Length: 268
Image (cartoon, rainbow, N blue to C red; front, top):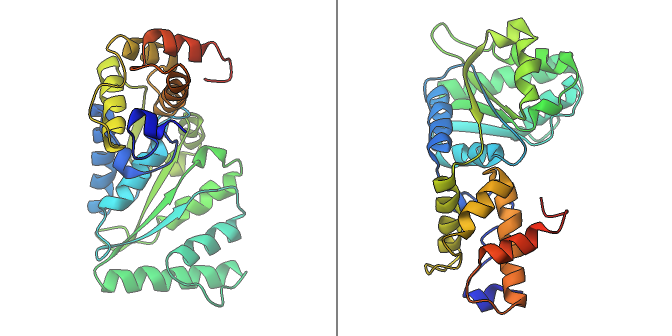
């Protein structure tokens, strides 16, 4: 609706996992670096946490994009609320075996063993990413994930497991000592700083096709303070601000427009 008015080629503040819009703050850069380290070193497990909207899924997607397809085979579990058999079946499916999948756990473990050994022989490493892992309530599922780390050679794991979730994931794992001891790297995402919030907004607008100043200098502080620097909330406020500015025929998004958007209790 407002694209032509602002000269945009596409919406800059969609809450989707498009890596083009990923703006690396210092902590996002560090998070991605640590996850890459775990994968490239063939370590067992990493845990990435952060509050809702902090960018965990986007970081996980960015990791998939930087992994070379000829060196890695990946599985991305979006919904971990599965039974242990369903989880194994989904992992095996995403790792390339689509036909004749058994509902028997032993059969699935045999297929997974074959997949891991075949990838190892061909010089590829298997990476399994579980998003929204804080939603897992059944300790048996965590135990199933931990047991995946038993697939290893003398000097390296055949599979790297990455869990991403909200802060409560840390407590759940800390209460499972055998699992907790297998975690090689942990990282927690916080909200962006003020200067990072400004950089984030400008980057997304530029990717969407506009390099001129759409947002006034003083608007960034208001956006930052009202969103806590959380990317998802920043996106919500900025998207509605562009719509509101379009309706007001504004030439730039000002603090006044941001405050008008924030008056709607459903904004953030």
